[in-house]
Length: 227
Length: 258
Image (cartoon, rainbow over all chains, first blue to last red; front, side, top):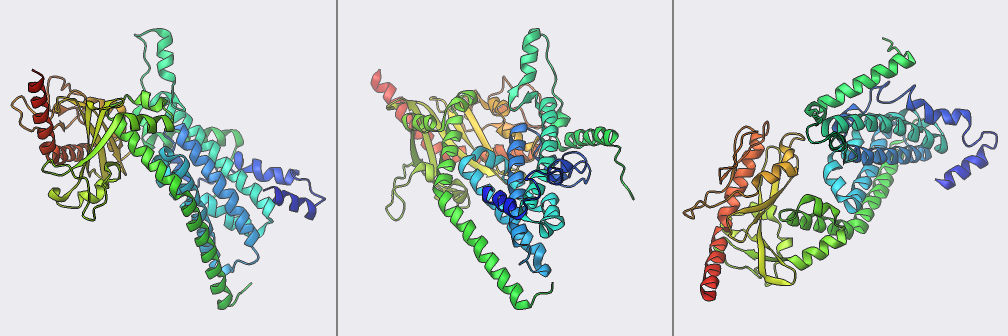
């Protein structure tokens, strides 16, 4: 990525590396234009992987990697990609990156691979990734595209991590595998125990948490969907 | 910008070749590491049948391999209870490398049955548990497991399960320690020495502590539980001949000692 930034510096001495416009690429998708809560994209994986924080974190990192790299690649190739086959080119690039992630997981984090490989594979069909390629990377310079991909992926990541936090806490009584409920019960002696909510472990729990997050967020930002 | 067909085809070919090379290159480079990861995972599952999950989790990969090396001796047996040491081409068969999924497709008489003996450190004869490998079908895809028998070759010392695609929260619960612990202390033979296997019952939450061959079931995952039962019945029956031989040799030993 360092060569990328250097290039951008040479080409655009007038615009700062993190000018206001570029900061917007990263901050916009976090809240105001969040891919999950505003655009309601990528819901499938948000529901599937979020029962526990650890796999969710791995998933988030994978999505960030795939989006940044895919945006970069497509942006670099944007003037050579034939427009009639651009969708399939985007798919090929995404699929390759996702397969790479999957192979690396299999080699270095086998437990995570066993748990996540199905969902990592599904990043290929994650609408957020392709949406950003089509809407942004095809028409913008590499550095801007990298920022845009990073921002969108971050917007996706913090939402699934938030959902996973509540689902793991309420459903399994732990955070990152650390048994929180047990320690709380320990403080109050043997009689006292907190019950976990089985609903949170099932996908329904993710819908409820996600719905609540969207509700709170839209109340705050005043966002209304236009018909 | 409207490109010619020739351009599109050339572009597609170049893209395919570049991406293909990238993928096959990565796969080549990572293959040995992945193989090690799979091997470690198998050994972890085998040890999981005899060790507490928390103990196993506390061990580093090297420690697990080392521990496995010191404490496990593996053998391969056939359905008649004979040791199989070489395949048809005369190559040595290693129990850890036996592909149980491939064997499952063959007739039971032709299958190879790996056997892992858990013993005191450095003393292969001082066995503490006998671990057998089981395999079968769950609801959506394959399920497998390792079952450890105590030295009486009857009482279950522990089990571990793995699955490919059981439903999370329902069938996938067979990988949870709480579910696997339910099998501990159950017996596969009755008092007369007849084979009974163990079976998960329909429904969940009942107390089967007095029953030797019944295990509390999985609510909402009866098909997975039935798969577990079938897998135990099939494979334990196949291992029975070898277990009988072991028992005989044991009773001879104790006679000799007397």
